[in-house]
Length: 129
Image 1 (cartoon, helix red, strand yellow):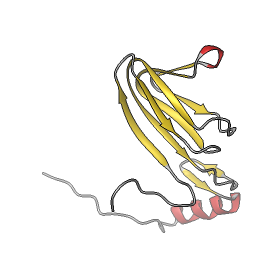
Image 2: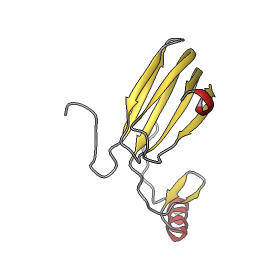
Image 3: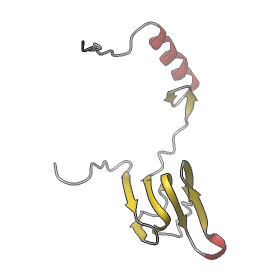
Image 4: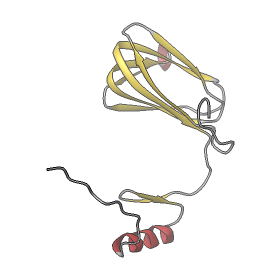
């Protein structure tokens, strides 16, 4: 398979960007997609003027999905590495408990019971001497 893995349902974008200080990165995004930037090194800015937001390392910025924009432009204020993640909203309910994410609270209860009862897949641990 060549190129990015996509499904017509979500049209995911998952980019790991390394950007030298002072450089910009532009990425087209479909209008209405949910998107965020997570900076894991350095510092970036998004937008300009009164709409400019600075995102430091170990922080995340959620992008507006109002549909008036068709992409994002990120500027590295210092050498930066960040993730740009986007996808079509699923418009489904979300229930979360610990590491488990499902659609309903009942599914969470069932998942917890399955976990407690050992019904999750396991893999054999390997050790070396």
